[in-house]
Image (tube, rainbow, N blue to C red; front, side, top):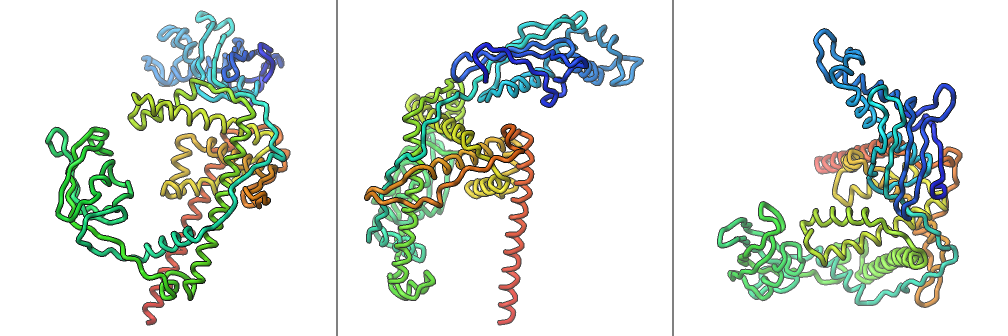
Length: 506
């Protein structure tokens, strides 16, 4: 981006069909950019009649398709007749509305702006609606990505927690494994945390029943059902009933406060198998409980090593953000906060609004920081990296990968996924240049969490990935996801056939 108020002239034909070079080679679209603030820019565009003429021609064609004039076939109405019946001003308005986005995008590209939100356009001057003479003058304001001075991260020292595995942590892992092989046994005593209860629920508002459920199996203390249920069930025995108030989580009365009546049908506790050699042989590939315990210790250790990587990433971002100022676009944050609160139906919750605002601002600062690192390190996103990221995202949402990609593509979210992969790579590259030690002063090997900068190819040296590139990557990612799904189904089918054949043989 150039200095404030500097004039840039653009007549690049490759951005939009309505922006092209004239026969004489003169440029008839001129634009300037004024920096209103670190996160706001004003783009002024002047379009000569020669540049608007193709849009005028398109406008006559579109209007000819939409009107019925006796004596003329649809789409074949001459411009002169359209001028009489519709008016030149309507043609001009149609042409400007059709071409405005193209002129704006060309100016954005030419000035290397990075828009963050929706632009606000104002038509300062219209061409004449008598003969289409005179320039079209546009003034467009838009929030843009702020420029920041990237702090140094090479050699930055980070201290993470040392990996220390206690006997209690190993015992907890063993108990978790035992619980998977445990059995539920009915007990004659009040329910407590960790018990499983069979319950019936009735929800009433102002004495009128609005919902009910019977025979629900619920683990006391899990917090997975409805607010207040755990407190209500504590010390309640089979056959007993109590009531409490809670906000309904779904249905026609979602968000409303109802009186909940809960009746306990049975109380069951989980009976764990004995931790001995027999259990080890049933629950694992090991022959002895000592071998199983040692394996569980290794799992806890690996989990803590992974935690070191996560901690190092968070510390790196935190330290870098403390040494750089990232301007915040208030309108962008406000829009994000409003969408979040509307989704939760909590627009009037001032305390929650403050929390969401703080979180949104933090996320924005992190994204700007990592985007800047990605540019400095010339990060590129490969098709395989995008595909893997999308497949992982599908798994998190419990969706089929191909359907997940289709949903993202339909909502125009693939470019944001590409940006997220680039940010993750940028953070991994920056982490690889930092010095990480544990709280005992020992060097920490985080080779699994770091990356090296990409070699910039000739194809990528001229600019960032375009939306068309992202769409192509989305299509290829969808194909790969579908292929992976088919391979998984074929593997499952083969395994089933093998199992069936073995059973028949027996």
